[in-house]
Image 1 (cartoon, one colour):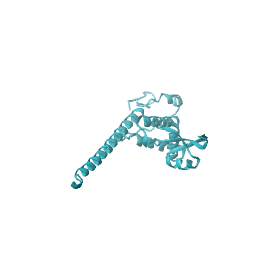
Image 2 (spheres, rainbow, N blue to C red):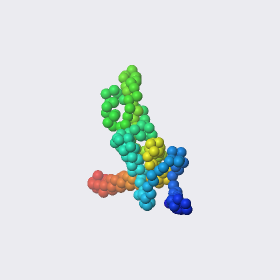
Image 3 (cartoon, one colour):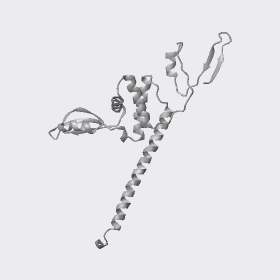
Image 4 (cartoon, rainbow, N blue to C red):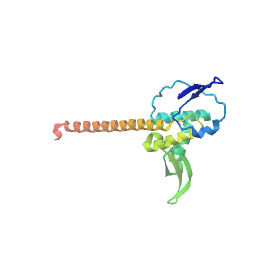
Length: 198
């Protein structure tokens, strides 16, 4: 709350608020209208990593559309996700649908005179790097804004991506250390093996 004053004649209070978000795009919709505003004491939200933020946003969209988060997630992958094209035998189409997070049949083609099917397959977000995840998350947040849902700020999104990247970097380092320990252990076993083999 930025300030509070009382009108001398009407005795009504004039309360001024500051916002960290850019709401200029909503001003025309509310200008001159009677609003119901609820003010609550600010509580700092726990920082979410980008994955947690993504699923929180998907949940809000799903609730607004009266559907489930998974359906919204697959829709967002098709719009903002990473994909590749593959060509498979006709009998392998159903298996590919099980293997990939989301995929679409593009159409039938011929490869060296043989029947084949071209498919568009989308990678699950767990395989994304920071840039790819950023594109997906920005797309989801833009959808929230178009639906006039309360969306995370750009600052919140940036911090969440930093947390996500830090977590993934830590997982990568830990995996490499485990692999190194496994290699060192095998080397040690080889060195301390049966002396008669030397």
